[in-house]
Image (cartoon, rainbow, N blue to C red; front, side):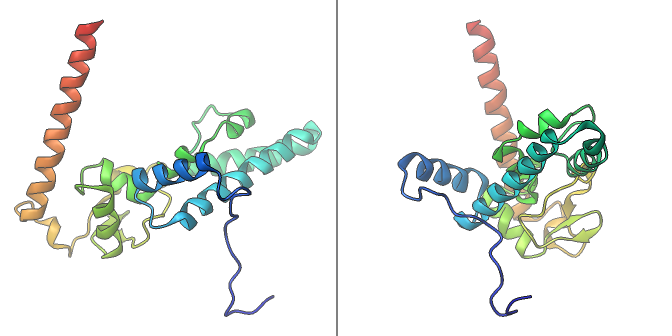
Length: 193
């Protein structure tokens, strides 16, 4: 059972903590996805490694035994949104850390244009300004399930729900200019070809 004051870790640390490539990769993920610290990254890495370990274990079993367990695993990953409907067990082994990090609520809030930066998205979530499926979610690492992407919006009691709020107008202006920059880059690359 264990001591309730000393909770068990939900992550595994890297085997080579001072490897320069691992440190640089972790810092890139921290900045790109707005993670608070490396523990959040390690939790998602551990989650991915456990999913992949289950898939490897199922591949080693006989076909009669693995069919039911395979369907349970695939349905769970499809519900989360990590796999498509036509995915097989081999696709589970192809999952990367980015796939899980892209399903975080913090990433969705930023990509939907509800915040200027990924760090502001985290702040909006923890302060209770974001709703998913008409309920306030205060956890930035919440994994958005498939079908919930369209239900992410500002909370009804949030001041950002007003379209004339000064911060919201500046957020929309930032996202409009970034969209225009993306379109101009695409036009430049198409002209080069």
